[in-house]
Length: 199
Image (cartoon, rainbow, N blue to C red; front, top):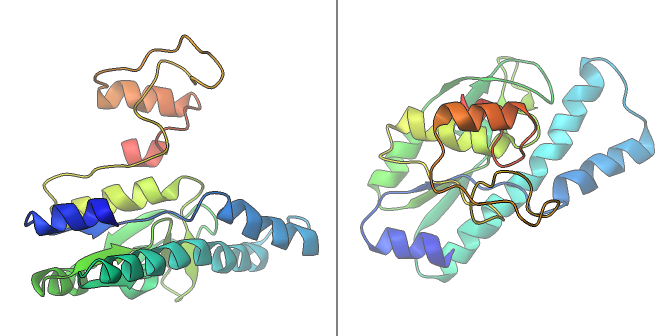
């Protein structure tokens, strides 16, 4: 919130796309698994998305409250309120379009806009999620739809490494990474960015 406030006070219009808090998505999906092991079919997938989407709603509302406490005007929206339209592939939906009118209106009113990552809505009005790491994809898609000057991804590591530094202590941090290199790393299982966000 302090970082967002700093950039806002410097005169930047900002849309922030938070993920759920650490461990929250796993906790929610664990609750579902306790009740029923994974079942094939759309009915179960729909409810998993309905459940998992609440993690991002909580962190988005909390960020808006934190920004308001910093003296800023801030408003949070769920994916369906924007709306971020997706297909109906529950738990791994793809974004099809983003309506930027409501967001632009709030930005022009001087507010920081917060949009839940990882989720959208299908043509039937059902909440959908974009797969693990989907908040990266949401952030990139929102930045593209808004014509943003840049998209910054903040994560819990200080850069992109040649391999996982928690596993290989001599891993080197890369000063620059091309889109092609990042795409290759993501496709080989690097967890830094979701592959669709790189695409």
